[in-house]
Image 1 (cartoon, rainbow, N blue to C red):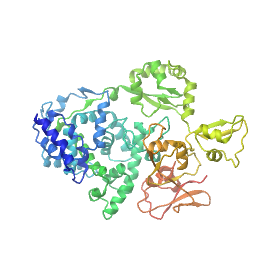
Image 2: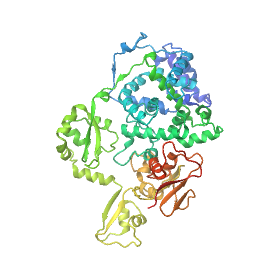
Image 3: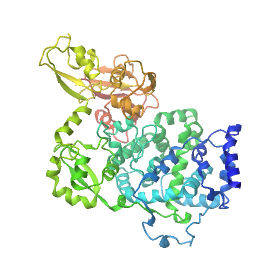
Image 4: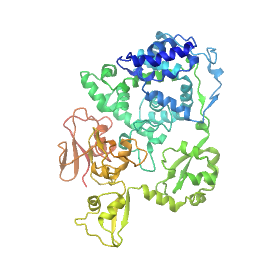
Length: 578
């Protein structure tokens, strides 16, 4: 009865206006304190009263960090009754199984100071960090054990690639903050995968996103991209905490915070000027680093992640195939195919001999796959999904197709069929008049705008989003044409799962800027687009402004190395003019 009374009071407190406190990153992590189990309120833990006292002054908004941890509940492969190793061998302090250790601030500070000696990252202890230690070591300790189990799956690969890019190995803990090591993680803002890449940033680092494939979910490719991104950010800031802040909120937000702090390039100096979520990002990172290195002192042990750890292997797919074919012919559970290969958005692997794909399947099925590979590609499933129908599906979601004009058709009827405009059809086919004839082949882009191709002039895009209000009769294709982007861009910017939109709906868009009108972009001898560097610009920022342009391309065109610095006023080649 007493517990119910306490919870009722806690629910009422925010309604009385007591929550007018300035919100910090702690507001985020305590957001789900209302959902503490009743037993935890009765444990008599000295810190429990802290949660109760603080609850009234914290927001009830969902925390991205907490939501990522909670997403681990949905992974079915864990065995909570099985440790990776015998926990009795780890339990050197003789803790009881349900005991939750806590320590004075001086102990936390001393342990973190010792960790700081082993890394170039300046680890510190403060009350912000302590709040996140409580999150991982007390409030969400069961989920932290799951994170520890997943670390055995992903950390070896992270460490290999971090070492290759000469990045501190401790940066592997960044992925814990970003995704809780959930390989199928996705945020409400549209970030995806272990390293939570947004669509635009992923494109800069060659992570392909199409209607069928999303490389942001590929553990290896996304880790390579994360390493390249961190390396580029470090070349700008020369400070790993600022790298973390820029990774989370973008270099533009960090640069603005530095200017507001008087030009000081120090995370704690610019901390008050960062976005609220980013203020908790570095403290969370330090807390994760601490907890993962002192798990035993907190009576934490890794739950076994089942077949995720050692029960799968990779095979190479060399021809077009669907998950249905693999599942029905070999017996691989569909849920396993989808979980271990989330990069294939429609359960279709668009492979070819020239463009093979690697997929992950349970180890027991590797032999049958290799022994029946040829037959597998031509296998007809019970649903009738076969190669010809898969090819049709590929055509359906592909941007570019060819329409053969039939007798009686005109540009207006063809435009209505593909939900594009007559002007688009004329532009795509270099037509000066709207006269067509039967048998004529017309290029059509189903998304309403052609994807950038090699040699095509990139579109410079504003870094600031605006909103487009959907009008009657508009489609995503028509809106994409207006803003010189693709339907995929619109869907990713607005986290849309399909193409249906409603009149009055507001869509986030990033307007294209005219190459001729923009003073920062000039044409030299008709060969290149140039960008004039502004104060605070980074190669990453610049690449994001141009569709289809990557950091590596800019480096190559301008003969820049990882150590090269760019200066305001400097002119950089962006791409060749088509």
